[in-house]
Image (spheres, rainbow, N blue to C red):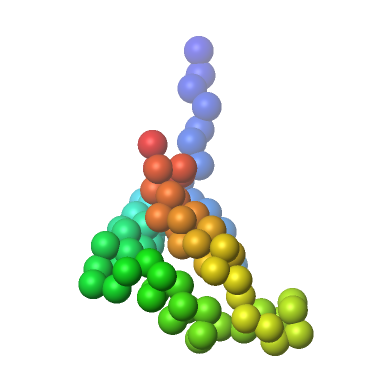
Length: 85
């Protein structure tokens, strides 16, 4: 019986990227957010700094909410668990 061929590259912006490079990038982002959140700044200070530095083009320049920031940072931290098994 013939085994199916596993795709080993992904086309990102017309550039071939290997799955290994993509996996390393996901792990790096996940680890970076975990280190940032475990650092000297507490979560509230971190969220406020990010909120102060960002505006949402979808809200006519209004600040991004703390809830959205928590969601994005949590999602980045969970990338490794979600996609690298």
